Image 1 (cartoon, one colour):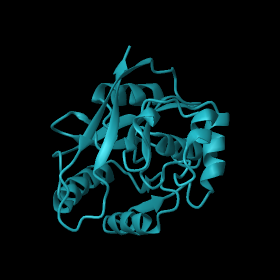
Image 2 (tube, one colour):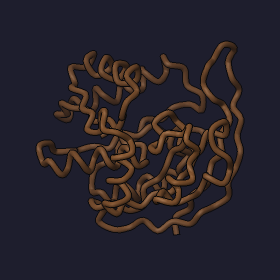
Image 3 (cartoon, helix red, strand yellow):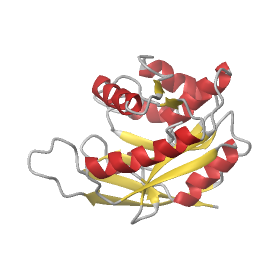
Length: 226
């Protein structure tokens, strides 16, 4: 299971576990080696490990530099995939919903290793997914928001119906275009709820290469374990 610690990967894992057709043996997460936090999401490793303990599935961490090149990313991923294959892994599960180019990229990566990519949430309307997430008693808080899409007040909020109602019409309700990222602290398949405290919110602007079309301004909410 490609595990970010956020709501989409949690909901994807939930659907896989409900079907009972696969044994999920590993949670695979990318870590910023400088800051010791989940890449992009900014969540502390301590909380990531608490998630794995609550789920009861072994965590596998891939350590990347703060701003890895695609070559570095793919080299580290391939080494990890070789390890997983040695441990009898045959499928790789993703929480992607509708970004076709991203799906094709992931499928190509997996095909190179003779692994089958699985997308439990694929093409399900995001309005349905977020409704299922909330109604199934998942609990999550936003940990990162794109400052070009959302203001600071959306960072550190619980993902509930009020949060969804407050989102601008231009923002996908699941944040599938990268508008926001989250941390799940309780789920139907957790052995116990993770106790968290909302810390400070910080603004970060990253250096942008010439011609790059990605957004580089974000708000991060620091979560702490109680």
